[in-house]
Image (tube, rainbow, N blue to C red; front, side, top):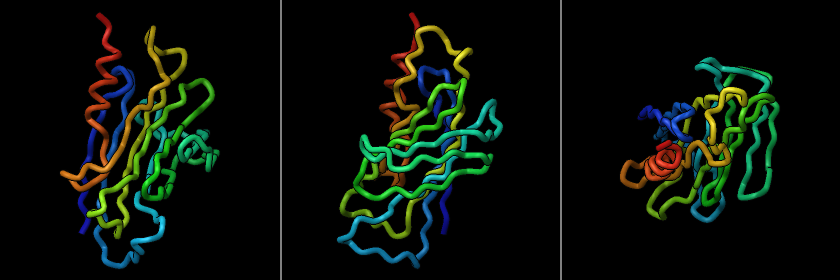
Length: 172
């Protein structure tokens, strides 16, 4: 059974759009050991400009503060990445002339949550041109923070973070 939900998040001071979709794949065939570090979340993402997929993006995956993977993307296709359980990750998309966009992922799961099958999280990340940024926009913050929501039984954007980041960007 596959459950698909789609979310839209207006974030980073209402200057950017990120479209997110969380999926739960519930097949019985994924074996997992309770003692080993294991993949719990598959990311499927692509960069867009004005809603259209773009290529010539550099994608960097960090685990904690350590760069663990750098991918020069020459395709408009989605990039697939697997994240291990019980870690903090950041994925950064960059392109010359555009702001580097980052999404943070917390893959810590409660002991009651079974990793088999692997959760998936899908997103389209809108790139912002450097020459079209609103004044006083601080672009150092992640666009979103994604973690496991026990009540909804899936990985999703932190609504508390999104609300806070949007409040910071309001001009009086």
